Length: 150
Image: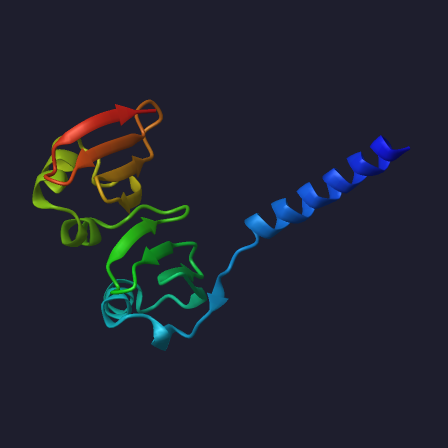
């Protein structure tokens, strides 16, 4: 009897902890609360698209547009991630946000019209494309291609 109750208690505590750790601390914010650099990026490239959701979590900002585009910015408004949803990221945006060496490499590989997602990390830049056999390209911060995976 004791082991049965103990097992139930452990299961309940585990469930409560799992829910607690997976709960998001995001809070909804108004677009005007985004850093100026983030607001400028959105106004410049997505002025005609309504914002669906804008959240802040631990100094980072997530913005979702009605057309399915998702963006993440740091506390200063620097773009960290751009997902085009079911669309591709425009060449104008790619040229603006990517280092020239990465932009040139994508151009050489005929990928400029196939980029679906860009993520800027502390040590690399990850680019996902719509190619069916090679869809993830990683570059170091100097713009050198370091890996291609599917």
